[in-house]
Image (cartoon, rainbow, N blue to C red; front, side, top):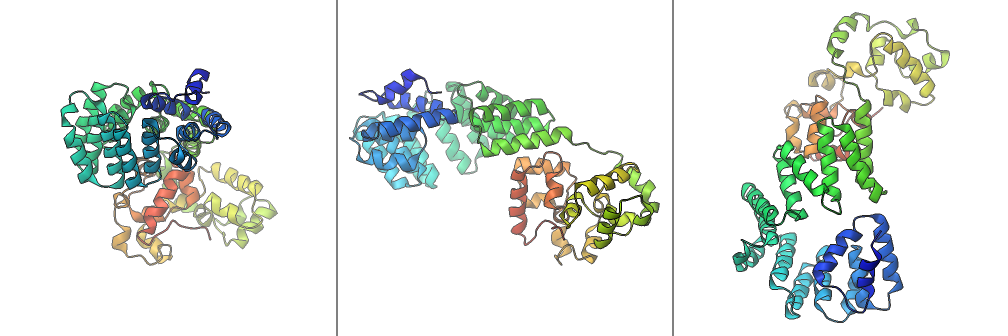
Length: 430
C-alpha cells in the first residue's frame, strides 16, 4: 500500500518536484492495491484539477488524467505529467508542446530533452530524436538517461551492438536505472546469451519495487532451463501484487504444466514393437457397451484407428465422456500405448493424401519453422515439441500444443497468427 507520508505529499498544498513524483509513480504501479488507493484519493480530491490529474497520472490512467491536467494551473509538474499523458495516448505533437512549456516554466533542460527524445522515438521520428540527443552530447559522461535513450535510438536503427554498449554505460553510471538494465537483459535474451540475461533480470528484481516484466521474462528463462520452482516464484511474486495480471496467470499455468509433463524417450522403440498389432479390432478389448458404441459411431474400428485419434478429439464427440476416456486410456497404458501416437510420425506426403494439408504446396509445407519468426518463448517451446517444419505445425491441434511442455496460450495465439499469414491453420477436430 502507498505510504501515508508519500500520499500526503501529493495532496498537500504544494506538489513535490517531478522527480519525486516519478519515484512515487513506480511505487503506486507496484501493486493493484496501491493503484486502487490512489484512484480513490483522486476521486476524493476531484475539485482540485491539478492534484486529481496528477493522481490519475500516477495510476497510469491517461484518459482520466488528461482533461483534469488540461484545465489545471500551469506549472512544471503539470506540463511534464501532461506531456507523458499525451505520449501515452499517442498524441505526440501535443506531448512535445507540453514538454516545451515545461522548459519555459523552468524545468531541467536535460530532463525535457530526454522526454522529447522518448516521444519522438515512440512516434518513429528517429531523425528528430537523434538531433535532440546530439544537442546534449556533452552529458554523455554523466547522464545514464542520455545513454539509455541513445541505446533506444540505436536499437530502432538496427545498430544492436552499439545499443547494448550504451545500455551498459547507462547501468554503469546508475546501477538502479531499471529501464536501461531491462533493455540490456532483453537484448542478451534475444541474442541467446541466456546466462547473462538471467543475471541482469535478477539484478532488476532486487530493485524496489520489482519490475513486473523483468519477473515474467525471468520466469520464462527459468522454465526453459527446467528451474521450475524459481519460475513459479517469479510468477507468484507478480500475482501477489497484481492478482489479476493476465499474462502472469498464463505463465503460472504453463509452469505448473511443465512440472507434470513426462517425456517418453522410448516412444520410438515401443512403436516399432507394437506395429504388428495396430490392426487388432476394437471388439477384442474389454470395453463397456457405451464406450464400444461411441467408438463405432466415430468409425474407430481398430487399435490403429484409436492411436490415430487424440484425447481432445474423443472428448469432442457427443456422448463421449471422461469415464469412457479413462477406460480407454487404462487399456492403452497397460500396453505401453497412448492416444494420438500414430499421428506423431506422419510425413507431409501421407497427410496430403488424406487431405489434411488443405492442398498447400509441399515446398511451403517443408519450410523450416524459423520462417514463422516466432518470439524467443514460442520458438523454444515449439523446438521441444520436435516441430521442425510448417507441416509439423499444422499437423497439431490447439489442444495437442497446449498439452505439451512449456506451451501456453500466449504461444498458441502467436503461432496461429503467424500461420494465418501463410494461409495455413492448425489441424481442427472433426
